[in-house]
Length: 207
Ligand SMILES: [Mg+2]
Image (cartoon, rainbow, N blue to C red; front, side, top):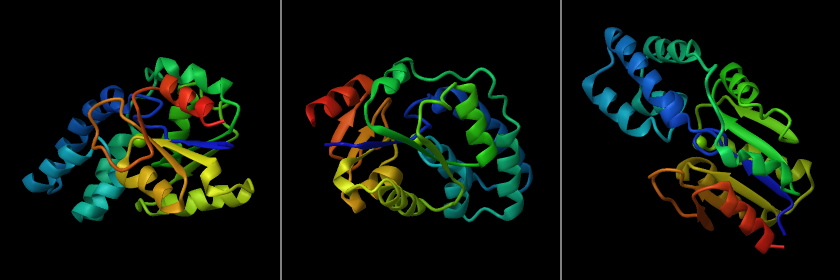
């Protein structure tokens, strides 16, 4: 039985890709090119930005501190005021399990998103991973299991990113559910869903 669900935010509960991603990325790239971002780095950035946080990509691509900070500052300046959650997010309040939101990025930006999306009261706890390291998710998930005194198999991980939260959940023996709201890279997960109605059904069937 699942006693706690760990939710991802971006592209899971909110359409980051179309509401923020594309607009912001163009602006970021334009500024970073002036500071020396190469064509090759630009290409990789555009390919991977949809599913991978900028801090992690900056590290993978070996961006200089100057370029990285230019990108991050541009992102922080983004107007978030019009963002909206996916309609089915309203289902979460009826989930009987404990709920924890674990999201990667800059604290300030992620907390602003949660506030504007009106999600601050949906969760028992909200944790922001500011590291540039996907492996850090695993550490955070272990700490949650310990804190709530659970077994890994009583915890469900729900997220879109196969290489981050899904992989971390698999490594710890948790139940992983990959949210494929669009055509994301499919990883190894226990379940694949397209919306929260399907998640609700899985939770009910697992009782
Ligand atoms: Mg995500």
